[in-house]
Every structure is written in C-alpha cells, then in structure tokens.
Length: 348
Image (cartoon, rainbow, N blue to C red; front, side, top):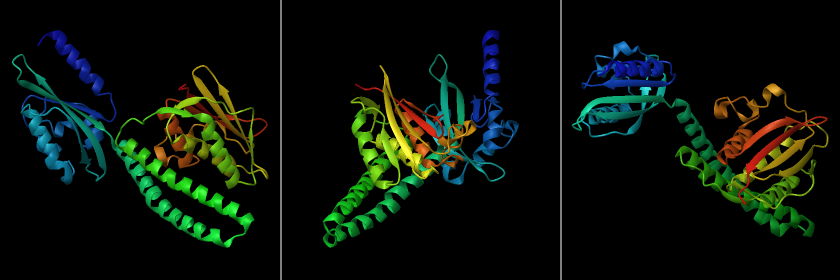
C-alpha cells in the first residue's frame, strides 16, 4: 500500500474518531480487528482495546435475543456471503441498552476475494424510542379511542328517537363528529405505520379550502364560546399534502382556543398565496409564547414526544408539515397572542 493511501486511511480513521454515536471497525482475519474507532466505546460502553484481539467480548455484549443473528451476520460477511445492514441491541456494562444498526462492507482484492471487512455501526436508540412511542400512540388511538367512540356513537343513535326536532340537529352533530374521529383513527394508523416502517409518505395534491372550511366548522361546534374569523377568503389552490392535512389545522385551531385565557377566544385564519407556496396563518388573542419557547413547543431540538412543549398535537403538526416539504413556525400577534404560520408547497 502506498504512503499516500496509508495517509488517506489515517485521515479517514481520524475523522471517524470524532463522530458521536458511530463506530467503524475493520478486520482482515476472523475473530480480530485491525482498527476500531473511538465511537465504539460510546455505543458498547467498553474501550476498543478490550475487543481488538477477541471478538467474543463484543458478541457477549449483544443482547441474548439478538446474539445468534448478529454472530451469523458477522460470520457470513467474513466468508464473503453477505453484505447488508442489520439491527441489534447492545447491553452496556451498566445494564443500559443501545440499539445499533450495523452495515458490513466487503472489500475485495483484484481476484474478487474478500480481503477486508469494514463495519459501520450507528446508534439508532433514539429512532427506536420514537418508533415505540408511535406504536404506543397507535394502540391508544386504535383501541382506546376507537372503542370509546363506538360506545358514544351507539348511544347517540339510540338518542335520536328520543329528542324533539330541535335536539335532532345536536344529535346529528354528535354523530358527525364521532364518525370523523373514527375516520381519523384509521388515518393515524396509516401514518404511524408509515413512519415506523421508514417509508415515505404518499404526498399528493390536496384542495386546501375544503380542508380549512371543514375544520373551522367542526371547531365552531366544539368551541361555541370562541369566535372564528376568516380574514379575506380561503383560496382555491391545491397543496402538497395527504389526508392528514386536516389534523394539522385541527391541532392548531384547538391549540389557539385551549391555551387561550381570554373570556372570548378569537381565532383569525388568513391565507397568502404565492407562486410556489401557500401560507396559512392562524392567529389568536391568547397570552402568547415567549421567544425562547417558540421552537420548543413543536419539540424541535428536543427528544420527540418527550419534549417539554405544548404537547403531542404541535409535535405532530411539525412532523406532518415537514413530511410535506413545508414549514411551520410561531410568531407574535399584535397586540397579544400568537400566530402559527403553516407554509405548504403548491401542487397545482
């Protein structure tokens, strides 16, 4: 190997030694390592030198339920039979568990024989935690909420035969809103499954005005004490989104009322159509949000659903809008309150 290539390899290893949550290792002989990066200790909790000459130390740190599968992948790579990524759990000396995604790359010589195996391990513990949170949310939505709504709808249908003409309208509203909730549990299930499976959301053209009109109408029924106003008119445009777009505006409209301490909460909706984007502004007359809290309310820079923000609603809003290729942020309203701005890509 030339001095230049040796220098390049040293530089490459030095780069990996600076990365957090990523470990690189190379092996030319089964059972031993030529090099292990400093990031190994962050993931395994043990110094690299403890495993350099004995791979069994590393294998013993693998969770018992994953150990045979990880060992099979390592052995297959050493024999040149497998070159793919796999997941596994590492049990650190203190008992804490880290999820790791490992990719073993086979380096072949001029004769096509495997001369070296390069392993890249990435700590995906936070990703796994988020998946577990989403799966828990999915179970709550699909089981608890769905079952409770079935009871509500059942009683409401029975009630229809026992109310006067004036009461019929209220029963119809209850049934309509209940059916909408059940429909959303189906959509939420699809969304959670998409996120957990790491697939891309199926973004498509969605007519903006009907979504806003429907959500405004439903919020007026849910919050009769609040005043909902449309500044100007709602535009006839299509935006890049999916069927969960209604959830974006429902959560923002709910938030504008539920966190409002005035006697008459006022929510004003306006739209600004541009060449490539549409801005939907939802302004309230509530107490407002301090500058140092404007990012936190969405969970941005925090740890997902565990962030100290307003709650899961705004975290979901930010997640969905980001998936659509748009942006959402909070601004100050005058003289008081907050404006949530949703910028979506036009699809027409």
